[in-house]
Image (cartoon, rainbow, N blue to C red; front, top):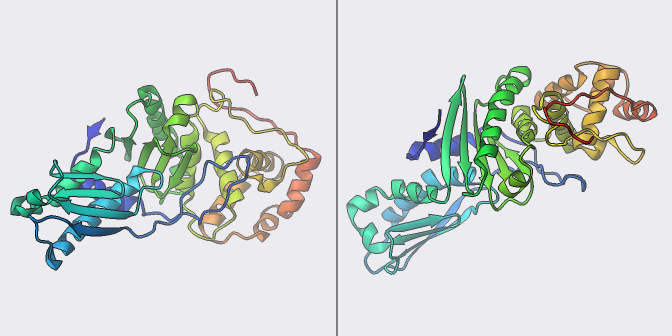
Length: 350
């Protein structure tokens, strides 16, 4: 079911939901794959109000009311809006603005004559929310079997077919990941297609951000949803483990539960002597699949649990397998053969 959202409750929901889960502090990704990463904890939002209007008299009470309206609306918009949406915002009240109110990331302009009227001042918050929504091409909410996806599209040229594939992948994979790995994970996720984002995708809180340029060019790479969805499910919080481990698990889960890795020509690269388990992403994921097949089935799932419980240390590897992580890698390097089977329908050159 698709439903357009146009009320204030939507942005308030996003403001709360986007910060419902904490994520690990940012760490530079390996040079080989720098584009899939999670955002830092949110910084405070701030607004500076300047009154250049001869029609409107800005006193302390009104300034506080406008600031409160801003706090009720803008953080939710910014949390959903996408990549590096401005947190420092200027609000200018003037008599030269032809419209009643305009708003975009970092900038709000208000017509002083319009704001002077009590009925307009009273509906300022709703009007601000409506104007911020106009920065998006569409907002849809899809609900199915107890899960919800809010899909914010900021690009009118974004392929409807890809959009539907991303939606289908979410409802196919995400509930499965929640059930298997972390039943406390939110059932309400936000997808944003961002025209400004130059990477591939990233997850933060309950939001997954997609590059429309990348997705239009790689329409079959829908298991980005699986990788980034696993980041939401991981929900490790700060200081729970190294980034190579977090990203390696996410790609390990993509390999295990992705729906079309063949179609996207996504594969786990063959072992090379120049590799390290700290290379992250697919290199680490292949090592984890080797552990799952040759050392101890279910061990990586246990590591994921230890990270979530904040009980993981380097000693965890030896406790679970009898070998340190370095000893496991040495054994892998000596005999890296592993049986791999990829999901999907289309033939791929791997």
